[in-house]
Image (cartoon, one colour):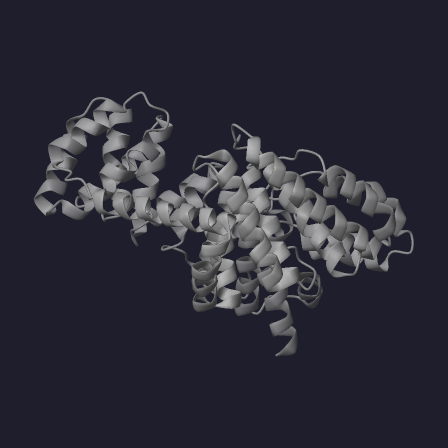
Length: 437
């Protein structure tokens, strides 16, 4: 599920590889992505596993039958990426299935009333449009534009008029001038193309109007404090304070910030204190950090979290000592980020003891170890980085872990060999570069 290349090597080398058949199939039919927006799907990885297993023909009908059902968006993306590779390898059966799904969505979008976020069928349609263009080039572009325009004409609303991803992709392939020229000429002859062009132009006008209206609000000290108090009991206060905090951080002078600290000290509610401290995520705390260190050991989780975030900006012995205190108490996710700017070589003893003690590596731990050893090279960190490499779920962070191993000269050959088959594209590319060098 994590997308490690070691699984692919096992499938390639084990003469009894077929015992893994059910595991590979299950991973294909379940969404195993961690964060699609950052690391992409594991479609390429799973297709490599299918080929290594020797189950291409056996799995093809199963995957196609699942793909033709109504799917949640992330599972659709994963299956689509697998089937794109089947089709690219010459499978006419899969190519026909992709085409059938495209036509099915074309009809469905014309009459569908709502678009639940879990499915995102308009986005599914757009992904298939892009594949059509990648496969059949200009002829597919013209057909996709006509189909999208027909959907727009039948709907008579703007629910399916956003095709930025498709258009950007096509402009990279064909160029702005060719597409603009086609739109000018074809709009005179085709009602569908005219509808498509009209819809995207209208959407662009709306965006420009909204952009002109979007003026950064003035956030005074009084307004910021009021907002922090309004959100005292709101469990999502950290996110909802963001706009006010960013605005205040850009407009406040040092006197405002020092006055805010005085108000925070006098405030009785820990939740309100935490909300007020939100501004110091992006700018330095203007007073003695002993106050933040005190808050970082608060029983109020919200106050503790934001105090630690504010302390991450400082390089200071007190922050270093707090970090080790938190780590040794078992709070890795709070302690490790404070070491990014305060790491010293002897800290590895503590890091090793507490990171290697469990096979459950949280994303926060993975990210923080990545940041520590990206910033600080160490010839004795190999076992720490390898542990996080093995048990961290995020393939994007894993790529940076591998790079940190390389820069610290602790990247072992077997790990590098695994990286050639990693689920994350950039890790595979990096492994090839390192092998070549």
